[in-house]
Length: 249
Ligand code: MG
Image 1 (cartoon, protein in one colour):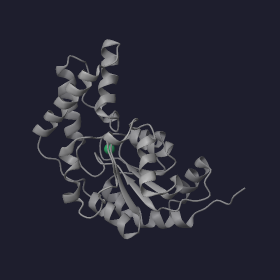
Image 2 (tube, rainbow, N blue to C red):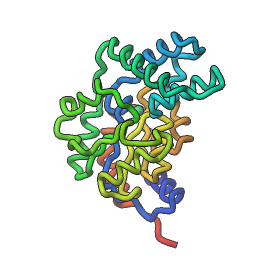
Image 3 (cartoon, helix red, strand yellow):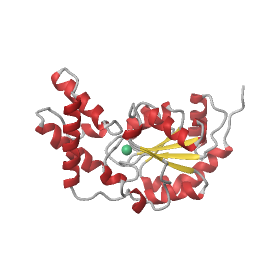
Image 4 (spheres, rainbow, N blue to C red):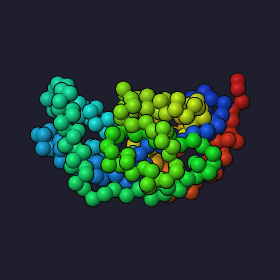
């Protein structure tokens, strides 16, 4: 099972095999069902700022840092870069609007997914473009014992957010693993692109309105329709990764 996905990935990256030792796991839309709240608070903020936008476009910016999203939208509307003050003020307000919404819940299937990685002996690193404490501070409660204290990369740890590979490369350094020893878990095309550019076997999970084709185009090695389906498939997928290789030419 999954052999053609794996062979395809190995050929594209010129790897002989993937030997998973670490899982690099996104937070919003992957561990938490938080994207509805993020898109609602972004839409409110940007509309109030007088910038024309649609609610669904914010799903496409997922993975970027807040500052990068603000800069992009101000450029689009007003043809100039956002100032540092604008970035700070708008992101602060976005966080306030987010916190006014009903609390987000862990993504169904996410606890099983992370637990399976632990059971199978893979290190776990949290890799998020977010800097919002409201969710980051809940990780230890909602995913107890699954992310060690130092094993987290947030927007504060990187110069370039996703789709730049830097967040995942930093996570690989934290876990002392090479790209071909990693599995990336993502729900957003920009995150998938970052994971694939970092050289990791990137699993895309569609937990929102993003179509499967967008995830494949971004470089997902395989796409699952829900986190529950992904968790169910994970043991056999990891076994297949360990047992599938292409001979060195
Ligand atoms: Mg995400």
